[in-house]
Image 1 (cartoon, one colour):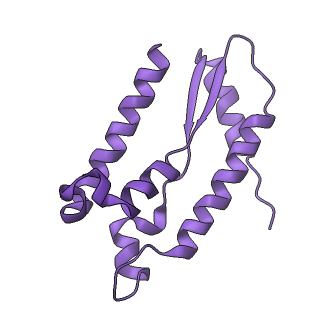
Image 2 (cartoon, one colour):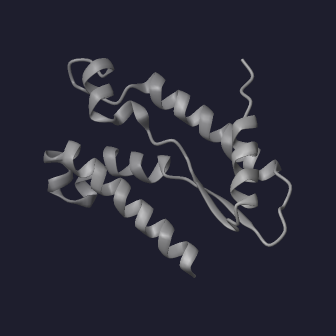
Image 3 (cartoon, one colour):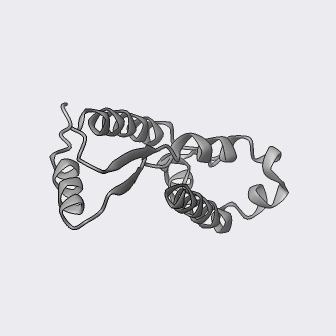
Length: 126
């Protein structure tokens, strides 16, 4: 099956025409690891749903290639921001990040996303 990212191209062009010059595009997160998918598709151990994460990786690969192939718009910077791998590392190696993430993962997941968005914001202020 061939995925098309016509919508991405059009939306980026629309943002550019509205005056945006620094655009960050976030990858899909490891959706197989969100609490609902771990409950629904993670089995008795509530592990990350591998097929869901595989789909996210395929999507991210195509998205990254599409963004790379876009023609440079004058005075603009479009960056692909990988959130999949850092989040997956936090989920898989939670012991390295502190006990609270493993105990309160569903609450901390939103906070982790918020921190990544704040870091992206700092990057674009440079």
